[in-house]
Structure formats: C-alpha cells, structure tokens
Amino acid sequence: MRLFQLFRSIQIKLILMVLLLILIAVQLIGVYFISTMKNSLTTSFTNNLNAQAKLLTTFLSSSDIKDGNAQAASEVKLNEVVGNFFTISGAEIQVLDAGGKLLATSNLSQQPFIGRKNTSLLVSRALQGVRDNEEEIIDDDNTRSKIIAKPVISNGKIVGAIYIVASMKDLYDTIERVNQIFVSATLIALGLTAVLGVLLAGTITSPIKALTRQATAVAEGRFDERVPVFGKDEIGQLSVAFNDMTDRLSEALSINEEEKEKLSSILSNMSDGVLATDELGRVIVTNHRAREMLDIEAAAEGSTLSECLGIEKAPIAEALQGKETTQYLHREVEDNEEALLFRVTLTPIRRRDKGVAGVIAVLHDVTEMEKLEQSRREFVANVSHELRTPLTTIKSYAEALDDGALEEPPLAGRFVDVIRNETERMIRLVTDLLHLSRFDSRRNQLRRQQTDLSEMLEEVVDRFSFQLRQKAITVTVKVESKLESVWLDRDGIDQVLDNLVSNAIKYTLDGGSIDISAGRNEAGMLAIAIKDTGIGIPKKDLNRIFERFYRVDKARSRNMGGTGLGLSIAREIVRAHGGSLALDSDTNKGTVATVLLPIVLEGSEQS
Image (cartoon, rainbow, N blue to C red; front, side, top):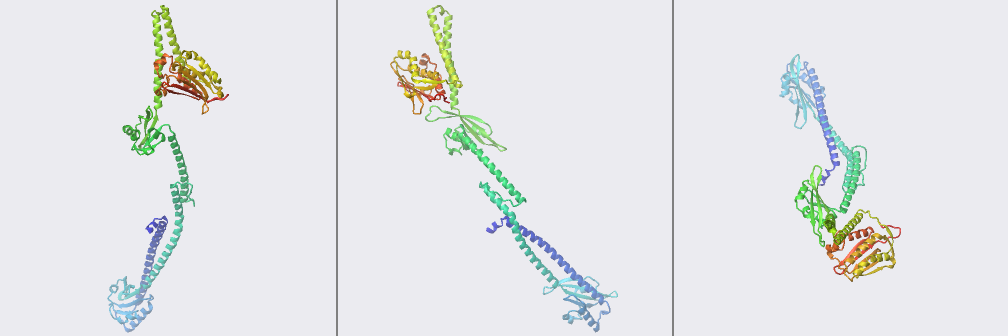
C-alpha cells in the first residue's frame, strides 16, 4: 500500500519518466550502435577473408596444381604456402584439386585427411565456378565460424579450390565486451540521471507542494499565508497568480461576510417578518420578527411554508411557478380581544438560467393600519352624522318658520333659539375638528409661560362654580408647595382641565365630590389628578375612550352638548407637552383622570 502511495508522488513519476526516457533512448542508440558495429566488423572480417582468399587463389593459379594431381614436392610446397601465407588467426585453409580431394591444409591436426575428398556443398559450388560461396556455422562448442570456398582457375580452367574456415570468436568477444561496456555506461547514466532527476524534480515539486499547502490553508480559511516565488518561470507565475487569487478570495469572502452580516442585521431588525424557502417550499431562513408574529420556534426551519403560515398550498405553488401572490392571515392572540391581521406577500426567488429557486414570504402587520382605516371610516361616518343631525334640525325649523311660524312670536322665538343652539353646536364641532387637524399636522405651536398652579386650578373651579352649585358638588384643590409655579402652555392646559372637570361634573351625581391635586410623582413629572365620585366608565370602554367621537352613552352625551372630541383634543394637547393622559375608572365608583407633564425649566423647551 505504501509502495502504491509512493508512486502517486509527482516527484517519483517525474524521475521514473526521465529514467524511462533515458533508458529507451540509450537502448535505441545501443541497439543501433551494436547492430551497426556488428555489421561493420562482420563485413570487415568477411572482406578481409575474401581478400586473403583471392590472393591465395591468384598465387595457386600457377602450376602447383596440375591436372588435379599433386606431386610430393608440390604437396610440401603447398603446405608451406598455406601454413605461412594466411594471416587470419585461427583460420584453417584447405587446398583442393579439381576433384575436391584435399591437397594441403594449414591445420596440422587435419594432415591425416590429405587425399580425402571434401564433400561440402560450398566446395562443390566452387568447383563448378561459383565464386561467392560463404556461410556462417556454429560448431559443437558454440563457436561461430566463417566458411569461404573459391575456385582456383588456371588458363581459364578450374584446377582446384580453396576452402577456408575462420573462427569468429574474437569478433563476437569484441562485440560482447562492447555490449558490457554499453550496459555499464547505461547503468551509470541511469544512476546519474536518477540523482539529477531527484534534484530537478525537487525544483518542480517543491513549489507544487508549497501551492498544495497554501491551497489547504485557503480551504481551511487561513488567508494570511503566501506561496514563496522561486523564479519567473511558469511555476513562479502560477505562484504569483495563486497569491493574487488568495488576496482576491480573502477580499471577496470579507465582502461576502460583511454583506451577510448586513443582511442578517437587516432581517433581524426588520419590522416585517421574512421567511425564505427552497425550491420544494421548505423553510430555510426565518427572522426573529417572523417567529414572533407566527409564534414559532427557530426549529420550524425545515417544515413547509404552508404549515408555518397556516394557509393553503395553492398560493405557495403559484409562487414556486413564478407568480407573485398576496394573502391575508388572521391570527388570534391569547389575552387579546382583537385578532392580528397580517398581509403575506409571496415572491418567487429567481436565479439566472435556473428558474425559480424558492419563495420569500414577507409578513406585514396591518392590524394597526386596518384599525386606522376603520377609525377613519368611523370618523367620516361620525362627522357626517354629527353634522347631518344639526343641519336637519336647522332645515326643519327654518322650513317651519317659512311655513308660517314667524307669525307666531313665541313659537318663532323658540325655533330661532333651537337654530342658534344647533349652529353653535356645529361651530363647536368644527372648532374641535380644526384643533385636531392642527395637532395631526403638527402645526399647533406651544406658547409656554410661567404659570401659578394654584391660581390656574382655582380659576378652573371658578369657571364651573355655577354648575357645581346646581348639583351641590364639593370641590377640593391641593397643590404641592414646591410646585407653585411651572412653565407650560396655559391656554392648552386650561382647555384640558376644563374638559376633564366638565366631564367630572356631568357624570357625578348631585351631592358628589371632586378632588383636584397637583404634585411631583416618582418619575419627577408634574401630575395633575382630577378624581370624582361619578358613575364611572365601564372597563370595556376604557381602551376606546380617547377615540374621536366615541361616547360611552351616546344619547346622553349628545344631549349634554358633547361632540365626542374633547378627550381626544385633551390627549393631543398633553402629548404636545411631552406628557400623557390616563383614565382609571370603575363603574359607580368614580373616575380618576391623571395628567402627567414634564417639568420644564425657565428658558428651555421640551422637545
């Protein structure tokens, strides 16, 4: 296994590749060189042998061989010639007559065979006049020999032949030594190549290893390391490009993380709920507001969008097909009399060339908007009703006067008083509406002045002294000594106190009592409390008592001349001062109206 892993190394692969290339090249060169050398040596050996044989045939073409018979003196002479003439070591020379009989030989061991016939095919061909007769043989001791047979021609007549057997042992020994030298040189070259290959491969693999380490570091999120650059070659350029890529990747990831943090912060702090799904409609992202609005846990991610929203799957399927849809979701909340209303906008998430990849559901709480819209409709209806009633009365009494009531002075006077009262009622209504309009448009400026609290409260009581005496209601005023003088809008606060005291008188039975007090509360604010012993306000009406035109007892309130806007105007005035107005009441136990105002120092203005 380790050997297999070793061969995975690019350094080993490079070394092996170089060694194989060198080995193949050397082998090709060696085969060509040895083959060429062998052919050259063999050709040279054969040519030398042929030259010696040709010289010998020329020498023997004299009268030494006659009529195919040799005399004793001639045999001795031939033996001397073949014994001394031939220069190739290890070669045996036989001189044959025209019949193929052995006349002389250079090999002393073959002397007993003189007179015998040589039956070799080469000899037969030579005696027939064929000049090129040669072959190679391998004898019993595995020695190669070259055989040449040539005719001896005298006066145009074949008088004999020569038969030469030359050993090629020295030639093949030379070739073998050359082979051994070549193999040794090849091994030395491969060894040196291996050493140089390790060194050269190291110059390539070292930068690659450094690149690998840097790539691993980048994959693990470490962007501070750099690949060393060893030169300006391709690997050096690759290292420079990799370092530049690391810098760009680090910058891109930083920007991506920053954008992700921004997106996460935006999602977390959005007033709208957001849910995102994948292409199958499973929730993958929710923000805190969505979980709060739907009362689900973060673990809801992974469930379907229809389960989280509690709606049908059809609009979600339409969104997944690329169509934006809007749904309204009603949700009941415990301990809350009114249900919440959410507008759910389903928008498909599109990717380039990939179609719809999911859906984003944006939940917008439109409960207050719906309440405001309802209040607006009620306000318009109430204004229309409040104006239509006196206008109808005025019209009817005017028609009555026109029809002849003017001729009856007592009746006409009473009709005119009714018309005057209804007109004043309309004027009060329009005036109150103008007050509210100025507060809504923030065009009502406060004019603060130093005010004596005791004096202001006493004047309020004096303005209602007649009504108080009529109903025998007792009033007490108590002001904290340290708060005798404060800075506030006297006219505005007078209007607030007049409204509260007027309501207290209206709904307090004869012989009741009203307590008015002013002091500093625990939060350091001015607290003016008006407490009565009247009929009180039902709990169910307390939350709506400040709504415009809202009356607990509509018929009675209208008969008493109220427009239903007094408390709304009072609250707006107090809010303009930076304070608050609260009512605490129980049925048949009385009501406590508390005005909280910030204490403003002289020369300053409450923002």
